[in-house]
Image (cartoon, rainbow, N blue to C red; front, side, top):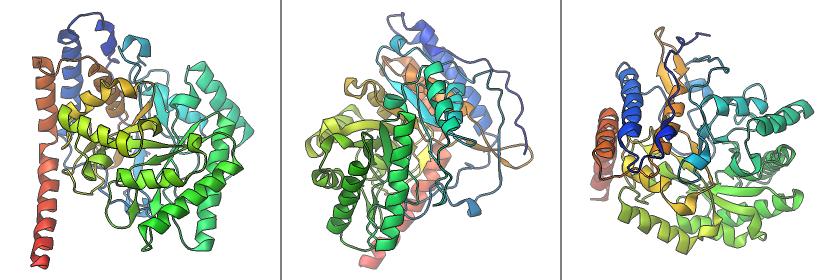
Length: 427
């Protein structure tokens, strides 16, 4: 395994200037420093290392391990965080921003990895998401996770957001496969309860060619059964980008599942910004943002919104392509995330990055650069209270859009080509 070069850059704390009335000049200077550093590294990459993938309930995302190149994880000294955690009280709004961190070696390691990137919330897999059979959660791992959260001041019940296995499809019609999916699902809920975690995020399911209504009914039935088998975990439906037989790409899908859930206190929604945009829900302007969330509140209900996955989109609006981009570099753009970070209704929720962090090392191998997440957390925190009409925001917005221009152009060309083919077929 190849080690990444040691980092000499000191952590950036954007929040030391929060007392300044304009919250722009010195904060913006620090943000620009981070963006330029990341851009310099990005310019050396020939292409994004993370494989692009289409949504599928049966196929893990990102692409299956057998199709990926060998990955060497960039090692870091955990005693030297890539960024210091912000005191949430200093941010102006109680926004708990983090990322989906590794739990390799045990769930307790997710806590350490969250601290390392300066996260105030985090997501993790409770077991391998690529296989059905996993060892039971050990008492040692449980105790270390609980004590780690306490030591590092993480409220696991509020700000840890485990992600369900990509293998699980609660809409499965085949009896044997449905039982397999349910057993894995309820096992994760039991693990949550042992760890003191209250929220559990999962992909709703795939119709498998059956009707949407029957798939929705099966999902709800599995949730009702799982709720009765466990005590308190809130099962959080993730909205999807759509395409094919995927369930959950519309607010109506989520509404219909929730309507059939017996215990409404045990169900909620996690909105993935990339998925929403790909599904046709615009967030790019204040007006579009308000329209989208008004429609969510009217169709699903504001009380069901429990969490966010914060991802920009490499693909354009209504493309139905699940292609995550780094914050501000995609078709969503920085303005959308400014709206999210300044919405009072979203306070105290876990907000988790799932943006690309893979890059090519000097030897050609793929490594994970967790500094990207550390920088993006600080970037998002800096948006709280920032003046979008000011020069600082506009300059930052322009720099980030320039970084992602080539990738957006590439994906737009793919979408246009596909649309053209479909138009010809209709004729």
